[in-house]
Length: 585
DNA sequence: CTTTCTCTAAAGTGCACTGTGGCCAGTGC
Image (cartoon, rainbow, N blue to C red; front, top):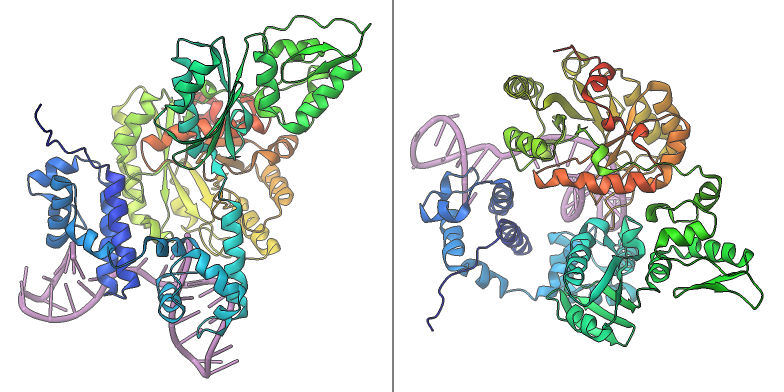
């Protein structure tokens, strides 16, 4: 046997993270700020680079990438060819790894972390918490009572979110495990349940229900999956594990006859199930995770159930899609036969809010358009950042007009997709827009979004956004509430007032499909629909892969009871053309 | 550390906000 010398390819994201980590360490060492920025820029340049880094390194051409000079090219070349970077490893040895947790606490940056470390020896979140509780932080120069209180709250918030994951984070793990279970010869039926199946924007754990005649074999195979870190419980019917990323996953093993009941039960929500069981009881039956049976002797015999829909049918209900099972009126609607026919992924015909390398996207216009064609979209809109979003390399009016020109040129060459030239225009603090009207008038549509000054009062923020909506060039509002799930709360906003204004001005509201956003939140869409406000599902894609986020957007729209009639981008091209008052081709 | 120029030296996204400490510094977008 010969030894293998082949080195596994280092993912581009890992390289980018290493550079960002170096920047962080240099910050802690109070290095030359421009050196720090050079590493930050390089991390970004690598992230945005779409070519094959390894072959560029082998050709010695790394310094041709914008933002990579002689020194960085050398270090990256070492990393790409040997798998190690000496500089990085030496630097890393100077710090305990826990200290980097402190950067995750909002309000703490390198300067403050350095003070905490040098004066109180704080090098981890747990030490920081202790110091806050003993009042030591408030005594420090540059800190005070308020900072101490804010830090403690941030630590508490962090702890609360520790066992919560975004739908988009958990979905690949859930799907990998479902596929693994389905591939086993011993499994009959497999279903992922719980909040993941209900497509909640945040999930706490993963639940799988499997029917089988050989539960021990299935459990063995489940715990042997490479994603599994450790087994915390192992019984005949239930196995619980912790996956490598930290999330708990439960596997329930049942007979095939029990399967529909287990799936219905473990899909929840708890509130939905309580209501459903109450309904069974009214018919003299008892419903649990194993069966539907007469409650006592003499009660009528329930029908034989083969699948989940059968349970609902037995209770005189239409089938209720998992996304709707939140006990918010779905049972009454199922009884009356008025459940909406929910939008499906296949109904989407195009998208409007997408970026390119011209602002902060990772792929070029051509690459993004190719990806959109592959997804089968009939139309595709580009909306890069406007000039005030300089941190996202926002476009000056001049650059924007150049981009419009290149979009029109590419559009003329393609006959299987229609391209639209738009912009994601910043709503400035006073509600005015980032370009004059004569510039906006030259675009096919405008996505108006807030990217700065999040701390306005509710009244001021509401007035700001309404003012933007009143500009006739504004077609839709992007990521209305500014939340980043598990990272940042929404800003203060009077949403009913915004919905009223949207109805009055005919402004569409985006359902931003990025799994960190999924806003406007699904809980508001029925109120929007009542007012006749239209939804537009946008991926806010910064890369070709990002386009696939529309799937999460459709999940959220389904949770919001939306049908294809409620979502503008389910319309065919001809109707979009009329709605946007575009010249006929 | 990189880029660009005034080509071996200088400049390098800019503003709002917050809290603290006395009119500034650090953080975050």
